[in-house]
Image 1: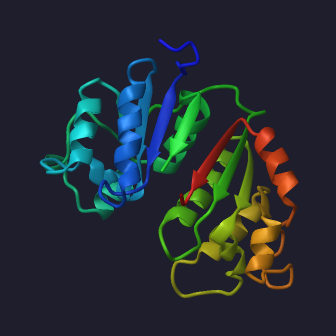
Image 2: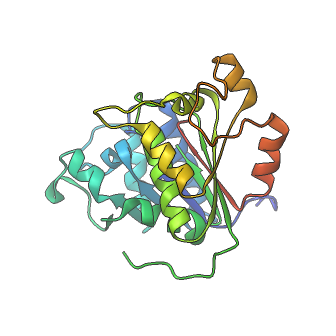
Length: 119
Length: 125
């Protein structure tokens, strides 16, 4: 292993829908790689909540499911889930639903993770 | 969710907004995050960059959701709001055409701001 590999915690904030552009897929690939050395977590807000919609047929979703299997923390904005009309039976399980998303986002950024990436 | 309870009074959060209003939710999310961080006791800076500088131009009242109002609220709460000098000039935004209380420093001060921050959050990328 390269001794320059970053091993600290990384939080990923996703604000865009899975197929909005190719950068989401690239970021998730990087996040999947990061699980090898780091504790990672996700905060899904705005159109980012569409990542957890079940039964999608696209590569971005497949990568995200692979990440979920590694038991990472995933926090989702309740306000944006409701705005998107996504009910509890339409979304993946083992998520943390935040009913105070901006309050929890601040904790996520300032206290929970050493490094934070937004997209 | 459980509240994270730590001594964070001295931590600095800088929020950079790179997208203009009414194109996505980015500006509104950024400003709401800034207000929450301030309420929790962090020192907060907001830096308007690239098309994010257009938010400063929303000076009038509107009968629909108004990012300018959110920005005014941010300024009233004592959050430092600055915007990029070059980006402002490129868009003909001057102190006469923007919301009161916003500084327009040069790029070097932007770099200093980033160096002094514990965390930098970018909205609009």
